[in-house]
Structures are given as C-alpha cells and as structure tokens.
Length: 222
Image (tube, rainbow, N blue to C red; front, side, top):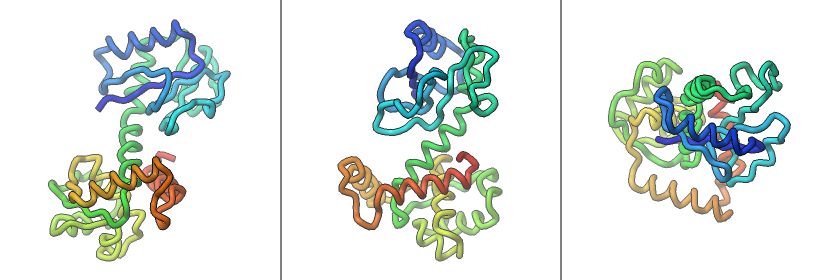
C-alpha cells in the first residue's frame, strides 16, 4: 500500500527534491508519493504556515513541520524535518512514522463500520495483538467459532463495545478478518452517505469521529 506525502508552503525546489528522494530511495520500507493538493497521510508544512489551511476532504494523519536546522519548531522529538533537506533524514522520518500511519488508516476504516457489521476470523491473531488486552483471547475464540460484530463480542466477552471495535480494527490491520458481504455493502453505503451528508440518524458523523478518537487513545496514537 502506497502512502501519500503532502506538502504545504514548501518551495518548489524542495518539493522536487522530495519527489526525487521518495522515488529513488532504496531504503524506504513503504512506497510513497508526493502530492501538493488533495488527501495525504503525512503533511510536511513550512513552520511559518498554519496546517489548518491545508485544503482536502480529510485531514492528514500526521503533520510534520519543516524548520531551519537547529530549531525544534515546537513539535514532538523526531517529528520535524530540517532544511536543507537531507535524503537520509527524510527516509528515517518516513520509516519511523509509517507503522503509526498504517494503524491509523486501519482504525479509521474500522471506525466507519457499524458496530453491527460482522466479521469472521480467517487466521489466529498474533501474540502482539492478543497481549494488548487479556480479554482479546476470548474475543478471538468467539470469532473463530462464528461471525461476530463489535456489539455481539461486547455481549459475549462482557467488555466495552469500543474495546471490541479496537480489537476488530487490529485484526483487520493484520489481515486476519473476513467481513461478511452484507457488512462490506453496508459499510460502503454508510461511507457514501457520510460523503453526501445523509448518514443514518443514529450514526452521525460526530459519533464516528468520537469513536475514532477513543480508539486512537487506546492504541497510544492520540
């Protein structure tokens, strides 16, 4: 899966340099493309610009200020890119944030699903996932027996439905789930409704956004 690196307020010469680096680097663990508009996964923004000015249907998952070398820019450690831009520093930055970006994309996709959408387990989860919560083992056992939704898992496992949604999101990231045909069609319909602004009354957009925020906090991505 290719990821998109957006740029805002970055001089053209630096944008072209970024394109050359992501196209030619053999050390990137994931393919990246550079975009000057539209949706992106990571946004490089000049430290003098406001990231809120980025015009796109969805906000980037990660915003990285581009600062003069030696300046912190007020961003978390390792979350800035210094100019002049060095290829190895850009590659190290993208490799470091890729796992979190992938998880966030998976969680976002899972959050768009209804808590009633059902999925089946097609392979046993990794120990890394199971060790996140002691309850995940019995949730996996329930999924291995029959298709379950976050709501039904909540009842079977006597655990919060948001935690069950988190678990399903992690399994989807692993490729360990197969969603039912109805769930896929329903999820696509709800996504289209959300774009048109005609989503069901009991699933407003702010509810999905709140769920996504809670899942990210549970995964330590907030």
